[in-house]
Length: 348
Ligand SMILES: Cc1cc2nc3c(=O)[nH]c(=O)nc-3n(C[C@H](O)[C@H](O)[C@H](O)COP(=O)(O)OP(=O)(O)OC[C@H]3O[C@@H](n4cnc5c(N)ncnc54)[C@H](O)[C@@H]3O)c2cc1C
Ligand code: SF4
Picture 1 (tube, protein in one colour):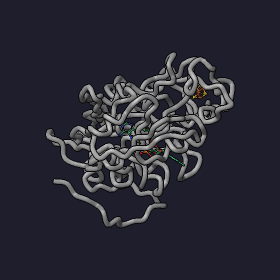
Picture 2 (picture 1 turned 45 degrees about the vertical axis):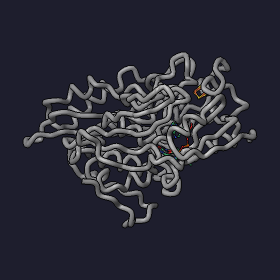
Picture 3 (picture 1 turned 180 degrees about the vertical axis):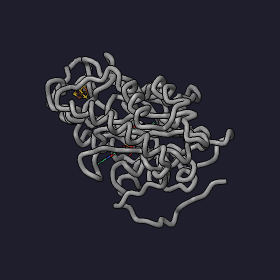
Picture 4 (picture 1 turned 90 degrees about the vertical axis):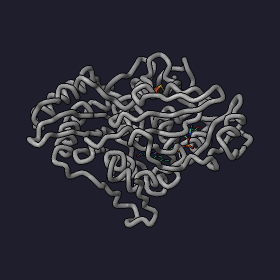
């Protein structure tokens, strides 16, 4: 690990003032420290965000919810309001990592975790994301985890987050601050496709600090939602394919509106508004879900080892939508977690 200086500011203003050349923010450290140990990240200065008062989960002015960037993934997943009003997000969080990691990992850090492409972590292998212009070792290499949608010649990596797939479906908004002011970024615009610049995972400037993630009101999706994660092990494994599905059904069981986002298939959570529009006004049937899957996966292409994802994604989309329609998926649990947590909080 390369030597670095370390500061621990007590406020957002102090944190922004401490940011300079070669600086990285650090929150839970569950991704950044690994990258530093592997020499993928070599910051000259770490600005520790853990003393900032950004760990609250509070109602927003328009009836949604504001998730503090420093709230832990576990606290967010088990927050009583999140579980009741955004069960899709709770389920996605509990499908990620392990209880220990979720206790440290923060919401802001989750959005900015880097790809799990093995070549990105291997400093002996050329990687355009780590070193622009070096080449892509994954193309023609091991591609089991890689993208089937939205890839470029420069990079075929996927975004590994579960939380982000649910946030995409819930149309979250990311609030950020820098010394020039604050701005809000729609979740669809937050992560990038790789194009010719895979070194840029997202549209955030290095000096910008995520302060909150806003969940707009989504009462229509409270009952009929599901997060399906398909992976190599039942726990502690990244998604091969994941699906966040939410349906607003009328009293006849017809679809008023739908949201579907995919994980494990692209450089960012994958959403296709046309696929969701196609479901509006239709019956919640396997045939209609399969049609939506076709539209969602238009242009999907195998990279070799990951050809199985083409079929797996289609089946997972249909199954997630069927589970959402049945309304049986709320209150997901991770069997590795301790039940009956004492810190459940209810917000008005
Ligand atoms: C073994 C293992 C298994 C895992 N499995 C899964 C999984 O199945 N699913 C899944 O979704 N995730 C998984 N993860 C990833 C985990 O969720 C992330 O490592 C975690 O969410 C990152 O959060 P953090 O607070 O620790 O971020 P850090 O490691 O502290 O930071 C990560 C990045 O975010 C930046 N950052 C942090 N906070 C802010 C902020 N407020 N504003 C601006 N920049 C910020 C940092 O500068 C850094 O670049 C796994 C991790 C490990 C180690
Ligand atoms: S897929 Fe992307 S992250 Fe992986 S080696 Fe290629 S450029 Fe690097």
